Image (cartoon, rainbow, N blue to C red):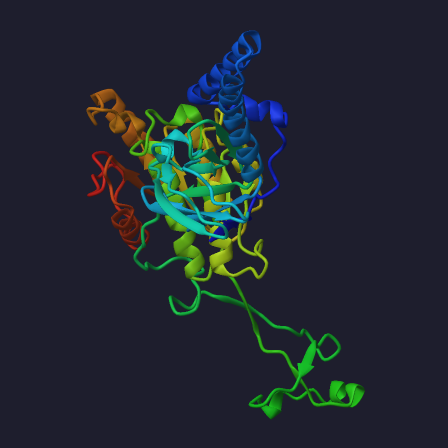
Length: 451
């Protein structure tokens, strides 16, 4: 939850009394004009009673301007956003609070918050008189089907005096940002290479010592095995020291997201590109939960924040960093995957999970080289031709897609086609079966119309 601090005194002066006079309503201007005219007539005609009436008519709107101008700077506003990060299609609630910190009551107030049009209509609230020291709270909801970071604010307050003579506007400088992250889906547990403890025996371990001279001891803790006491260090430090346990090494995984503009067709929350972004987010969250150290890589060779970048390096913090980065990822102008291939040069035994768009023969060859630089590789391949409005592709396009998929499988990829409306959990489970029992190239799979 993020909070906007009260903004009393934050706004800039808008020309002092001159701007306040500019806030006179039609009624206030009419009263002022009538008062001045009556006063002039009274002077010309020598009517003292008419002069008093004219002065009253002229002074009343000016008095309202002075009082309202002073009151404007004695009203504090704040905003609370909960939550500050929501998945696409989910709602967040914004709470607004207004405090009258002056000794005078306010008149009629209109509260308005500025929000991007994609989050919904601009919220407006009409508040009745607020007593001295009083408080009013209102709230509204925002929702977006599109990823991104959206600013909320500034909060704007419009004040009216009880006689309707003057109307002044005040803007508060405090603002918040709503982060709309991609939708994620829980993925089923499948056998993965290098999986963490509890899902297989492939977890690597490294010893904290290589020999008696390389030992890194620690202080004895209640319950430690006495057979691990390091007597030389105990004598050196004057307290009981033990050898460190074997340190588990986290399995590594790289999630490759193809963001090339030429690789996708269409736009909107149901487009192929948004499916790929959502799939990458789901894979990242799932793998972090299973103990992997995850790196997110795009076709441009840019590595987005990964595990260990948070203050404590916890899976939740790492997932939050990557999801925040995915919230604002957009199409790249690149034409190939060669930069990502260069970054993965000399890549080792880590797992590679890729979400790929349309690829020609050259890019398929690059993907084959990428496969040779990873321990094990899974690719979810999107053919944007079947993601068009009619969801169909001609025979030539289907044959091209089959050839591309066959080439990826022959290069060692576990390649799974992803069609419109395909559920990633089902594709993930299918990829696990494909790894265990590779299907002959050219056979149809349950998840797509081509394979």
